[in-house]
Image (cartoon, rainbow, N blue to C red; front, side, top):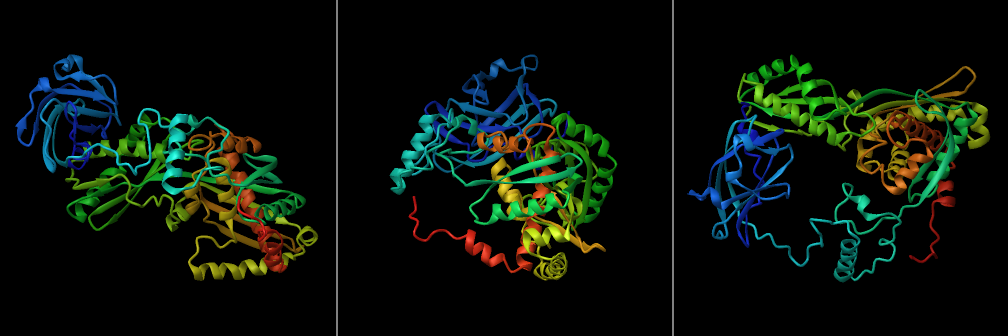
Length: 522
């Protein structure tokens, strides 16, 4: 039998799930521990009153109802991790307000669990101003049209462009909720980008989705400079994805004892994580002690997926094992994420320790090539990069280069990446030096580039097409994709740096980046 700490047990109950139904009363419990079996419900009380077993029905994830009499050790019901158990009680309706619920049940491998919570009765009814949805099939064409009509009725805006799309809306399951239409973003192609990488080799045409004028043209010019200078070398030098749980103790000494215990069990935790998700491999665990808290960072490799959900699942399994096996002190509280992974936030720790892929792109720009194409001198770029690095330091910026976020955002939108990851992915370290021939060696290291070629939005219609353009769709392609992204970023650094040095920056935006003021909105 495994011990379940109070810090976890209290989170089994789904708060706000208590409501009256036509047949009585309903609430729900979710297995947030690990795979289990339900062998018996010993007793259930509402406001101190026992509910007779024959008045209780259970169902797992919307499946068939199960009577308590049909559950026994030799007829146990599977209760997998993440499963929602709905409890229906054939009793009189409850009054509005708070109610106490006590439930005692047996669920190996945890043994006998006792749950005691208070919850406020909910109505379960949707108000008229709530967006239409169907719990059974929310992506059916009829539901999509219902939301489009709802928006028109509520806002007075007829959806002419948002409602037009060319793919099956059922593809959106798992990518978006309340699917109503699409945001059509212009997409341009830059290239060819000549890459000499460890995974990407050859010339690539790069899709960029943006509404910023001059952006595609700028990257295209930078790619031309790189090509005529012999290409860009790209190397993936690191690969980590984190989840950062925190464990809370009575005092700092208990937290230190926990950290000492934890660092001796990496191999065991590696096995626990692999059993939870075979695609997430635990590399190592960092820990940092502050006050009475032990902050940890579980570091994984996740293959061709970005992996945030994968590492969350694997780390949760590891934390369950930890909480059930550590007996050196009481864990007062526990949170699966402490904000120390800095998900979707730029941070110094990710610049140092790597989040996602750590990629370096480097090129020696020929002096004459830069003059011919960009009308700029390598000496100007070199001098400007040193001065600009001081400016970035003064500003506390996460990048001493020019605009890595431009390329990364445009590629992310085009290829179905999680665009919010631009926050950490756009961090960069730019370095330049002049050769004896006055050519310019330039490199940029992206320490936390989070990309994927499977999962998330990468399999959607237009996004998968964009990945196919670069030969980066599907398994086995993520390192290649990371190198192409880094090479594209470097092309932008060269182009914008040259434009600033040659005083073409403002004039280029004035020529290519301004909308026609006489154009009417369509």
